[in-house]
Image (cartoon, rainbow, N blue to C red; front, side, top):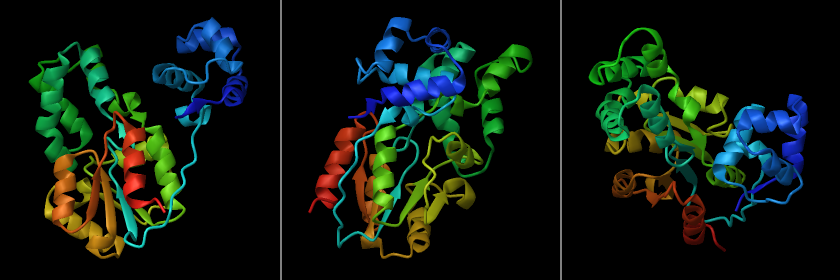
Length: 278
């Protein structure tokens, strides 16, 4: 499990020029809790507390944590590893929840609308602002003033990195060529990298659906990704949070594993046991 690094927290606080009282106020973390965190008396605080502290300090949650090191044994049957982004490296559903709260609409209604326009957005047929404007029309939001500002606020602001997977992909990158295969809208990937939602690593291939006009689980995208990896289909391992996408990859001849974003540690443990244990 990931644990808070008290020295890192104190260092980031001092670098920001905050007293403990000021950081407590800015983060919403109780002063008594903050002092205990810096003294190492609470090694595993809540995910919310860690992210609130990171936001207040303008750093990433990973900067405040001690992440476990993974032991990866080499596998003769794997020559390339592809990771999905949303649901594997990034929690994106919290952004939908936050959006629904900002515009004062039911979460289920907003989520349904999100999925309705997800395909065209990920195929590059519309950019994200166009997508948000369509949502405003469907949800009958005032297209001017504060309503428009709230509706057009970046959804990425409320996304969170899945830190165990960041550790996992970094460990994999030391032994294998790695890549990303993602259904994603225009411009999102560069923003993910900038905000450290996706780790900045040497990816041999980054296959984005918006660049190709085709999305998972269409077999065409697996064909393109196979060529980009310069590997045989059977030598590629793919990790995705969609069972439909996993099944499509397996039908194409890839090795593929389903990833549970709500239990990343167990997912990583299962994947390592199946493919990377000596």
